[in-house]
Image (cartoon, rainbow, N blue to C red; front, side, top):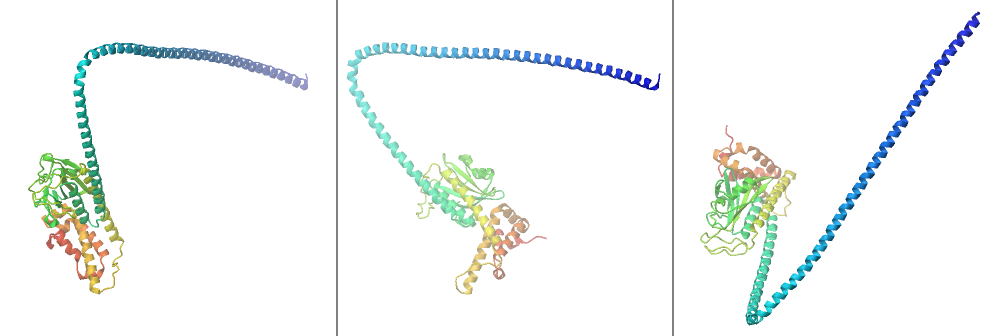
Amino acid sequence: MTFDEQLTQAFETLTDRLRDDVDREVRRVIDELTAAQAERERIESDARERVARAASQEIASAIATARQQAHDEGREAGKEEGRQRGVEEGRRQGVAEGQRQGLEEGRQQGVEAGLRQGVEEGRQQAADEARGALEAAAAAVAAAQHAARTVDLAASARLAEAVRSIGRGKSLSEILDTLVTCAGREATRAGVWLVRGGGFRSWRAVGFGDAIDHEQRGQSVELSFDGAGVIADAARTNEAASGDGPGAPRFAALPPGRMGFAVPIAMSGQVVAVLYADQGNVAGLGTTNHEPGTTNAEPGTLNPEPSSVVWPDTLEVLTRYAARCLEAVTAFKAARALTERPGESDVHAPGSRDEVNLDEEASARRYARLLVSEIKLYHESAVVEGRRDRDLAKRLGGEIAHARTLYEQRVPPDVRQRADYFHDELVRTLADGDATMLELKA
């Protein structure tokens, strides 16, 4: 056998083998595709059966729900119809029973008609008298309501005027004084007490008699925290407080049934003073009427009762407003002092140099008094303790230095060279006239 024949035979053998392999692979693939098709048809059949079962269940559930709903609606309709029939039946029975009772009562009334006729005239006379009494009572009520409306209008007018008066205040002392005056018009006694280290110090009061009333702050009265009653409560809680008897301050000596009322005066969240007022003045206290334009009452006479039953509400409104005015005045003074240039002064009308100097000196004194008064107001407890221990400069050195800076920025240099009004005010107001209290100890 030649080589070509061997090669041809080998090629044919390889071709037959490859054809057999391809045929087997094709049959295997066809078998797998056939099996996959059968499986897919089985899955689709199962899915259709499940969907059919689910649909059947949904339909059955919907039918059951509709049947139950129809049953419930029918039952409710039956109940409503039964209820209406019961109402109608009850109405018919009630009408019948009413007619029967009416006939019986009519028969009895007919029997008693003769007796009633005899007393009818007396009853009519009594009715006429009762009607007259009712008309008189109605007239009295109307008069009382008219009087109450008149009182309310007067109280509203006083409140509006008091707010305007407090708002016109240009200094801390003026605002506090106006608050006391306005409070004295609402209650029979009123006063402002400044918060200090261990208690309170009176600022001004009206209506309490010579032991408490005073027009000058130099005549202040000390009050311990334990004996302050509702004043201490208001200072501690920063809320209005009221009370009578044990709850009233010791100096008030309230008679039974009279209420004391205290409202805190807070600046920047800190209570610096408290307004106290009550209706408790009695004969013998020597109370006076402090309203402008009125004459003082005779010693031993009573002030008239406050004209509004809501005077505590009025006082709380006035006090809260006064506190806001105090904050505004303080902020305005500080802002004006910081924004004015050193040496800046007001423009004066033509006049002599002496008049200009006097105006500048008076302005410097007023500004020094304002700065030092604010130190005392905000740091009352430190002032008291500094006087006691004679170390005001140590306790209030930072506040004094800050106020000194504001003073020097506001007051022209030539005025500061003539006199140190700021130091003089420190000695007079803080040190109570003793300059050694302001010296730094070694």
